[in-house]
Amino acid sequence: MSLLSDLVNLNLSETTEKVIAEYIWIGGSGMDLRSKARTLPGPVSDPQKLPKWNYDGSSTGQAPGEDSEVILYPQAIFKDPFRRGNNILVMCDVYTPAGEPIPTNKRYNAAKIFSHPKVVAEEPWYGIEQEYTLLQKEVKWPIGWPTGGYPGPQGPYYCGVGADKAFGRDIVDSHYKACLYAGINISGINGEVMPGQWEFQVGPAVGISAGDELWVARYLLERITEIAGVVLSFDPKPIQGDWNGAGAHTNYSTKSMRNDGGYEIIKKAIENLKLRHKEHIAAYGEGNERRLTGRHETADINTFSWGVANRGASVRVGRDTEKCGKGYFEDRRPASNMDPYVVTSMIAETTILWKP
Image 1 (cartoon, one colour):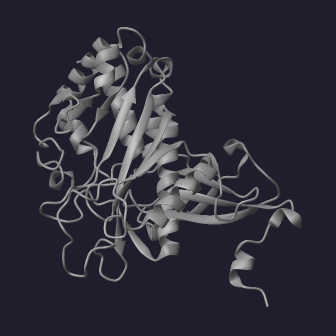
Image 2: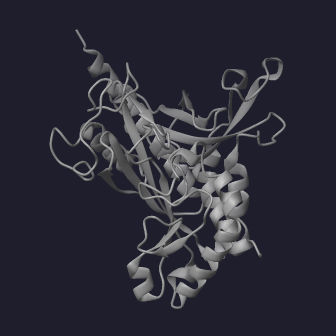
Image 3: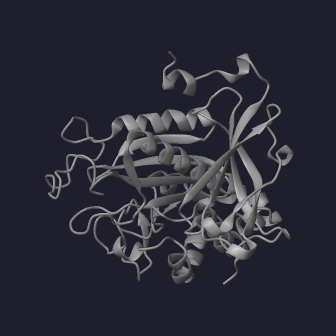
């Protein structure tokens, strides 16, 4: 008698050329990931060669019931760590049958910004630090915390080791390897300041690929926590009180910033960010005002500040960047639930295209 695990792990390439493509898209809330699978006649490596597909937008909050068809446009392909073999994950964006991007399609405008000749010439690099919290399924309380109670205060948990400090490492390590298998440029992981909270970093990634890779990394994490029976939260302040929130610090540089004399370019870019602070905050994630309080390694939401090696500033410049006179900076304002398509393209637009 076969075990379920035997069937899940069947190697299809032994018997068929056909492959399974899991089409992934973002639902109506802007944070809910959706996916469904279809069979392809053989391996595909170019997203332009994949068929477009449709789904019922009335069930995802993206279309009315009387005209519910929404079209998936394949945009990026990743290897599937769950089905393995030649099977693939496909990141899609979404359009009406007439070919118009629907309002929740944030990738469309981002791609326009990243294809602008001035932006292409600057080769914007991103490194996104995605923080998240793992919750117990039944009580929606962080894993490792006593039910209805609190653990000891913050201090031992950041990059901590041990059964009383690190909770959920098997999930985190599984996700790390799944991202590397998929072809995502994940550059590291660590335990965060609040127990039950972790971080992974995606990048360096160029332009639109930063958004594609972060969304697929989130999808993989959702699938892995589903298997583990744990709930994944991107809430920017999952626990009120004297606990760190969750952000998505976005590290950024352009070719000009990475070249000699780049520090002056960085300072001009930061000045542009300061002038558009309100617009950026409005686009940097829901509930961010609960996190950006001026405490717990954050700047106050209403005040723009920057500094070298200052984790309490809106924008932090590293000591190495100051010393070398070139490099990158970190926008510490984005919340953990931000849309990477919006944040990355907005930073590029403000620092490369926008003239105050």
